[in-house]
Image (cartoon, rainbow, N blue to C red; front, side, top):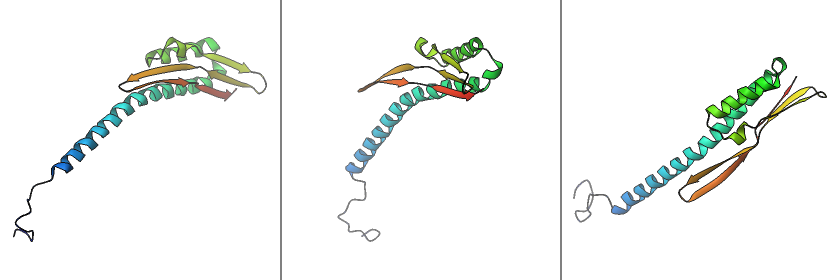
Length: 127
């Protein structure tokens, strides 16, 4: 007897545990792969939304053309489509505010998964 174990019991690991570990690792890699690709879509959305909110805060001192150019430049820098660069800017008199909005969609093609995400970023700020 070694360490209190009967001599007939093998000291090695069972094959099932390494198969389970391999399956868990494969599942983890798949979730990571899909998560990174879907995460990129949302990351671009939040970067565009952040730029829209920044420009809305500066809107009292800027004209609509400057705001539009800055947002379009950001959309182009982060790799969004022409559709995302179509920005609507509305200045309201009552209540005095600016609304900056856009609408676009992005399609991702992954193994066993194709999905189109539609986004409506919108920033509103009092003037």
